[in-house]
Image (cartoon, rainbow, N blue to C red):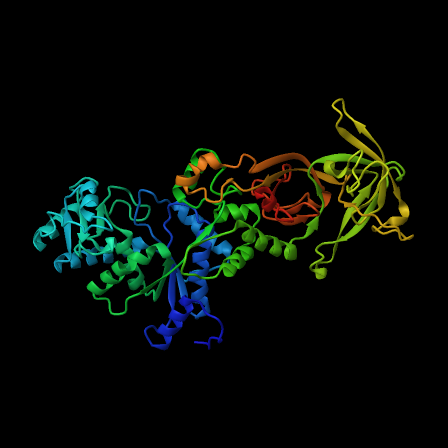
Length: 557
């Protein structure tokens, strides 16, 4: 293994390096084990970066293992989406595996525990099991079925496996300690009856292992050295270790927990996200307002920015809430460096330059990305008739208004100085056309006589423009923690009614007529944008990824 540089390390890296130095493991192997019952969200991104990142850092491997132990909630659709998200995020697994690959091994381990007198079949109802379990303050009570003979338990478990009983009629429990201060050690259920077709094994099984039982066995059989998981599994670690010790694995996996990532204004509960989808509150799991990775991809968040975000957060042992603005900062910083520039007018009003030659169209050369001069330049068309933003004109402007108004001169970005002379209004008093004159000596945006203007506005040529629909996205929720229903009410009550604004008839440069889904741009003065997946040549749809500046902070004030 290559020498690891002497740098500041987090507690996971320290543990891995110590295990390597002590010879506990010869090579590092990790795994990312999502359940295929929904789409991955931003919280999963942190786990992905930790699992795959540590494997890469220590020249090890990382497997993707789908935890398909609950067929009632799982689907191939989710499996495919998980694979796609991990690839998009920039990681490559060593092997694609499933917990169901180990069902035979896990089942044999259950039989072994029964034969050791360490597991028993319980006929108690779910309510009785819950009641007998006790609380943090009171010890649990032993099930009346706890002391069945090994022979009876083997026979009953076989009958469970053969499908003789209904769902919930019996379970297999580990026999540990009903007085343990750790509730997870109070005879946990390790197998339950579930007459449900599995997406991979079909109807071979009607009993399925619980996650706490399948997880350590799968890890160790697979060769995982460090089972990295979020902090809610810390109390499960004694159970993880108990199973591996009792089953006699020579080199068991080691579980290490880290704090999960909680992002404010974001919902990550799969159950609640599914409700948003089914109730039509969002247009799908990949709605650009969702906290899912596919939603963020559709919105135009670069994978590199999400990895940078996870890196900035770091690895901690205590849960905390991360401000959404940090994620947007990472996105904004990445796109500022990488997104080509373009001009678009979202709320167009016509600007006619009266003294510009009729029928003349000029080529204006502008930089593709000033952050990367090596990307060169592009050409935009300039003409007599232009589109500008309706917010960039005011007939009678206050003193500190530096955009276009009657008698005031402004710079058209990279083109000329213009001075508004008059405007035309409709029957409701709305300005529908502005007339102006231009100074032909100011081509390129500078005046040869040295006069300065304070305002610069963007524009699009009427003759060289394409129509587009632009979706402006904001936070989906108005409260920082929409999941905390005890304090803020149901998450449906806290939806932001202005989370999306759909603008039709927007004008974009003609050079963007052939954009493809996923293409990203900085529209000058407006923000960063991405072409939507449903966009077509005759129906261009563009999503705002993030504004140029954090405007949400002002909304909260």
